[in-house]
Length: 274
Image 1 (cartoon, helix red, strand yellow):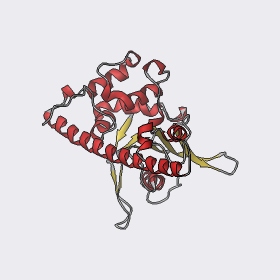
Image 2: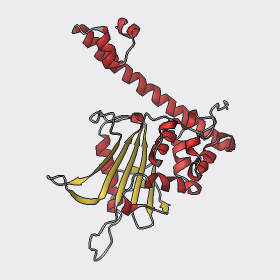
Image 3: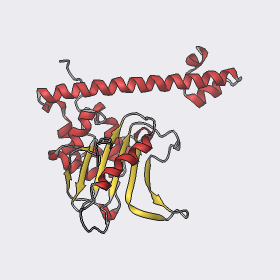
Image 4: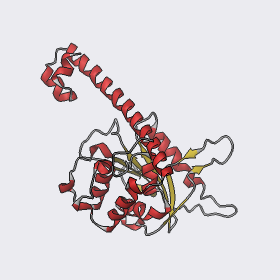
């Protein structure tokens, strides 16, 4: 087994995400994170983890596998997912998954159809193709009518585009900022930043310290980290090939190297090689 050089785990790996947010001893971390993005009326003080595999109503229904699935003390359902790369029909998949916590609330016999709220929370390590605004990284999606009035407030989809978060330690203002900083930078830190000295992050850093893992946990994390790095390499390579293809077409249309560089982020040498 190769030595792990980082002091803290990468929370964007499957192992890291579930170790920090998906384990019973650390559920206080998930509660704190969720409370930064939930409306005031649905703030939670406790939750219960449920099985993450939800079966359809009959054999023809497909299974839905969630990263985390939990229920708040007042009955709210939360699907919390880490998505490392964009995929075809990602939004369709989110809608489909949300249908399972809705359907499981059905009751036999007389039932008035009252439903508890269902939230899908997506922590995205990519940027939506159709949401390029650099300022807007938090998306709260709900059912609205033609006048943009909320038609139904018990079904929400919350997406966070992590690559858009650019703040450094000195710029962290809110608890939400601190959480996004942790998601983006935890594995590269050697010490707990001054801005993250409160008790909730003390708990997180203690849980994230690799030196405290058992042999089995270290092996599981290494496997998860390798998968994450391999996937990231594929995604980054694909993105770069796409950018170079666009830059090549710009060059063929007579655009200057300077303009191409400003629009694509490619260096002068990379553009000359096209």
